[in-house]
Image (cartoon, rainbow, N blue to C red; front, side, top):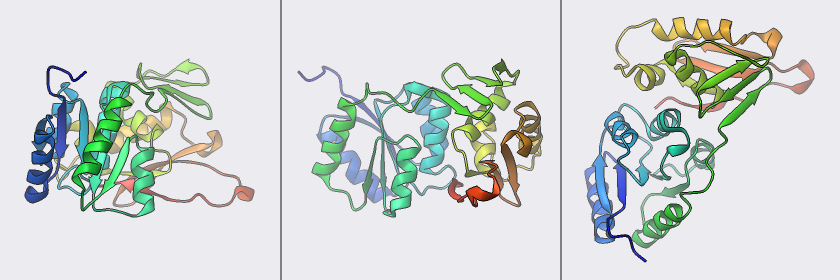
Amino acid sequence: MSPTFPLRIAYLEDDPLTAQEVCDWLREAGYDVQHHTDGQAFARAVERGGADACLLDWMLPGLSGPDVLCRLRLQLGASVPPVLFLTGRNAEADVVQALQAGADDYLVKPLSRPVLLARLQAVLRRSGSALPTARLRLGEIEADCSRRQIFVQGERVDLTDRETDLALHFLQNVNRLLTRDFLIQTIWGLRPEVETRTVDVHVSALRRKLRLQPEHGWRLVSVYGRGYRLERVRSADEGPLTESQGFDG
């Protein structure tokens, strides 16, 4: 039986022609569509509980689609609505990155109306299924993402809210470059051109509090001119780490 109220779709797309076409498809199918061209405004709307599903473009000014998804996972945890990427990026690595980041489906442009509507209905049907695990374990570090608690060797670490946000970003994106611009925008809500050493100070605090030093098996490395990456320290016989594509917009 159909619901008596339309399901709400939050849609992030900066191309006006694509956006108009997709909005028309969705509204004709009975959905209530809220279209956004800015990632921050989109994220704020979804965080207020304004969506039953999210459609995300990838390449956008400011926060990219993966950036937005990362922010929603941090802020909403298991309450993130189903997420579909609608993008022109068709490389296998991009599809894998989006799905590993928590997306429910991935469609490559040009879009097909019946396929889009069928995929959207499918993820809405599955919306009660489990999302990525709420607990993470990395060596001596364990994180309860839903309760926003982090432990080292079984002892809870005293972190500020900002430090917790930053720590969860790194722990959920091991071996992935997180740029300073991305962290400034998603955690502090500042424009990337704002000059600040706040990120650097917080990273230094995390290294100390979470014991992110090589002797403990993990290191939070600075990538000159770009940002930071949390990576595992491997022994010589394990071979080199493979660099993953980062959330850098």
